[in-house]
Length: 105
Image (cartoon, rainbow, N blue to C red; front, side, top):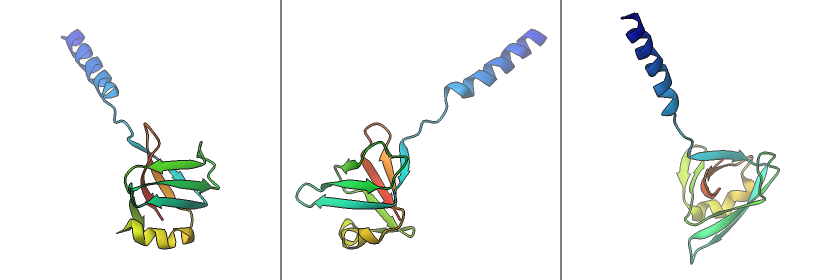
């Protein structure tokens, strides 16, 4: 009986380790950014400055990213008018291809 209980507890302790959550994105904070948005293709580039965590200078997006300013969602058009004023913007990047999913400031 004790062996069965020990086997059961061992299995329960191993199972959660194999079903751990996987990260879907990574966050990168920059001192400043420069954004290029192409309305015809709805794609663009984000150039980062002062980002010690970044392994690239430029990140792309194929669809307009979600953009929040002070926790409130804003449109890409509104963002393009004022993005240079953003202090320490945070980019959320897709973990697989490092494309921009969202920008928060």
